[in-house]
Length: 369
Image (tube, rainbow, N blue to C red):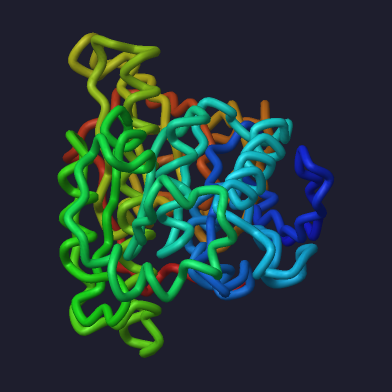
């Protein structure tokens, strides 16, 4: 994983300390995630939490809102309006990164950051939204320094049932059409169930509501933190798989598209020319992170890398293939491949059949290098 430390200038000339996390081996134009931290927290606490997302190929931007972490200013001077400016500046910075697919930017926000993320979806184009224990704040104090009303929030407003029409965050969520993950902490000492219910009432569709069993607000217990990371990464992994399959279906609408779950559920295949059409050969497009070790009894395969790079293991040999490279695999040769959402064309002669595809024991896999 690569970390790039950067600074972001806001529209009112504040300097925000930030870091971009990415996996350098994935091809360009990646989906991206903007992470918004909680009240008095900082980006540092979230690096561990988004690392699995980076390993999947997402580009993640984390930053400190003004008055937090290493960013400019004193916290007591800043309102939610100020922090919204920070969030919008960070979003725009991410959207203008040439490595990012600007049409596939998601937001993740925790607590105060969950509230801010909910407001942002009404201001920018957001593909998906993940919220953990999001807070709620009244509109009438939006421009008032947040610290000055914090005690009132904890004792009063956080416990209030709020209509969609009474709150700009809920109003924005009510119009949001993307997928939403809402994580609730079972033993939350700050955000009560009524606040979570207000969020659920605002969200119309596509909402996955998950309760982190036994967790307090900050998921301080290592086991609860692991549960949180797993829930977040599993949700984004499902979105990633859906994106890959939908891309195949858009390009080849009448062809079979499958996820190959054997041993490693990280291989996706689209049968462009199937064996049923002509038994003498078949052609498929395959997206590979890691395929399962296997051999073919009769079929000869030719791999051609169309996008990205592929480390191909063939018997006891490792071969690195780049874009445009081809390699032939003969019957009986045990092989498997590692990539980073690598797109290949696989040509089989005679055509691929399930009976000819023989899986090997997982002990043959060496992942130490």
